[in-house]
Length: 205
View 1: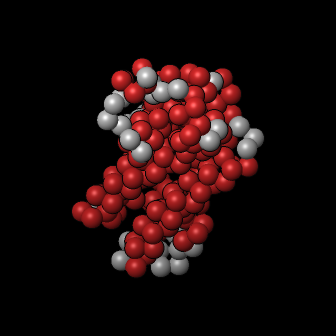
View 2: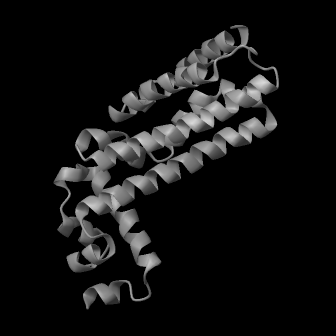
């Protein structure tokens, strides 16, 4: 009854969205193993049966949270990258690593949760979700490089797959720092210089 009084107008999709949003905060703060279903339910102002009604289990809720985080992050990153590319494709490639860091720093707790997911759980579906997230980043970077090759901004002989993985290796290094809460220590100047040297190699290669 108290739960109904607290959120009297929330129904269906709204209730589910609320649970996801509040659960992100709990998982980010405590991690998957330490977060209890009781705590997750209380954070959303609902009972545990209501939580199970919407998601079935803590595991399914965790997977839904991670999927939601991945979608939010990729929308944010894609927005930064594509806005630059629309103005100047070369500028977008020159700032790709910095845009990744900025997208991550915009929601630090949540990206920390997403990056640590595979370490905190040995669930194969969590691993698959992480892999799917990385494939989305691959597709984004590969698309930029393909456009750059078509426009003559990088070498016509460029191996797009190898160049994409080169970029991703730097982004994965940033992810590693994110897992260790060290985004702030990898400063903008260092990122710009790494990005500049890599793009220079692609243009002359």
